[in-house]
Image (cartoon, rainbow, N blue to C red; front, side, top):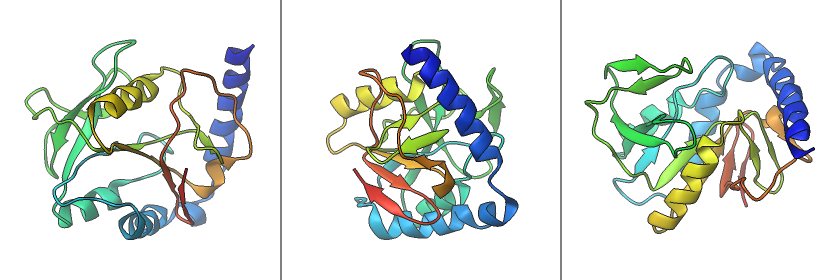
Length: 190
């Protein structure tokens, strides 16, 4: 039953996200970047994992460039295989990227592997308790769980549109909650 609930929630969340109009999307990434930098506590030279937006996902690239300008190091996720946590590799503007089987742009194998202290996670929907609804592969949940065990002070930050926040989402013991949520309108700590 939970899988059916999640599938229905994903369908609804995809429709809700694709319905976000151009006016709401315009400048959303830059607004969220300002909110993130003003609120999320970062030590100097923090390694932060972002993501390269796919389709109508929230565009965190303005924040990526701002973080680089503040002296932080950036990494992007790489899918190693089904049922495995994500690997993160260093990213710099102008780096060669490879297109994964999922259609996502990733750093090449030549890029340095990094263990981030902060992971920015995309989502289809997020609720008021910090649970995110992803695409169903469990990659981010496995990754966040692993990094919480390995990295002291680790933070998981959801990045999305305010219109993706919903009152309730189906979730279970496999779902890892976020520590923070940043949208173009607000920042929430869970």
